[in-house]
Amino acid sequence: MIQGVRLVVSALAADAIGEQGGRLYVWPKRSHCCGGVTTLAVATAPPPDKDFRRHDAPNFELYLPTHLARLPDELHLDAQGRSRRIQAYWNGCAWVV
Image (cartoon, rainbow, N blue to C red; front, top):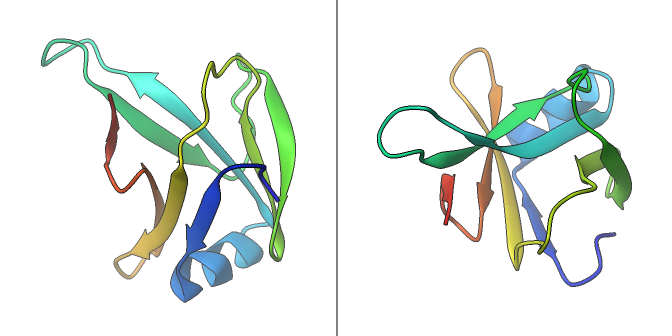
């Protein structure tokens, strides 16, 4: 479990994560447009240019960047559409402030 972080995982997201290997990597990604908005990126394999720390989540392994200055109060994971693409939200938002 992630100390101090409430993890909210939908049933669809939990199933999708399990079907894709049981590991989920979540990290902030800053865009070059729109004034540099920071959103959350999600993958089931680690991106080659980042360092992650493993956190135990119910039924899967969650990896967050080691460089984060502060963890969110809540991390929401959901799956959307037929492809059940996994999406992450810090504190209920699709972007990081």
